[in-house]
Length: 516
Image 1: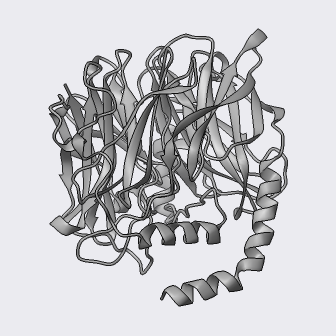
Image 2 (image 1 turned 90 degrees about the vertical axis):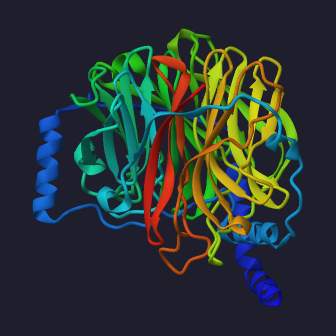
């Protein structure tokens, strides 16, 4: 098998060289700035959404069953090669086994542990890309291709609607949804992007709740993110907010295939939250996989970070608003060496689960000089999440460390949140083939007074009863992200949402309330 793979590499060398040269040339492009005008929002009422959903069901126009492809920052052949090389190494002892036995206070399950939406209810697409946020009275879960709203106190589902009906858009399928609750302005923000309508049009949709009630009306914006009209494909958008604006980042691919660079746009909150027309500031030519923050303070600087697929640096971008005009500069943070993770193994099958390419899969958390983030990298030749607290004032790492379920587990798809005191919550996916443990939803955390660099193995929210094998692919697509958000009414509580397995061909999701 190894010889066959080597032959395949040699036969593909010429194509790889052409693609790589093009990608490198694009990556060296200087940062470009563009201003795009976006017309005032459409006010979409609950009745509008319900009527649209009924019409879609009556016409049999439910969302198509779509496999959402993963687009790595490497070209496809380089990505397969890196993954193959990572998976052929012998599994060894992880570098910091101390995390399993250190007496640290970890969060426990509180009142809510419920089933989220599943693949059938959400329309059939996969992976789910589970995401969500907690607000004053509700928890919102967003997936491919659905929005589901739960009562915070009872865990009861109070509303479920397709992304198509929510945004009022049916021309192309919507995917990669995100949800954030702005606890300062008490507004919900829900976003998703659509597959391109043409070589010159692709839309990022933004929904802003008119009030703090997500069961009410939403202002709906659509932003054409193909600003250069040149066959670009916008992918893996991430959503952040600061005191001035909402910030959306995404990777750009030529014709949906060749990695080019990342792009970011900034939209003023005061106008968005009133449904007015807006001027969107775009920055193109950024490092791939740039990630925006959720900013918990009212400082003058907003920090975004971008990892590579291997190395010992993180690029930091500084967003500022002199004279209300967004500007962007960058610097570099040195971190311990990291590399692309192998895919996750499952018990009872040779089918692997995709663990992606070292990207940060969710928004950072920013407070004062601390910026919290996590990504999955290689450790002991297993996929393992590693968290960081960056000091943004001096571009150093205050603390970092791995977390995982056991010495033999495979762990990935992690998200992190921190409160203003520095107490931390994490959630992630985990399997343990040698122990016969199928995919789990796990959670853990650390208090600000705990020893630096340590997050214990934590607890499980849910353990799947079987492995995941919906197709003949290996690796199979797994959720590209999860979510953990701090409770708006209790900073020592958080809510998590993550993927689980309902049966070998159908994904589900779990939602839980955890706290100290």
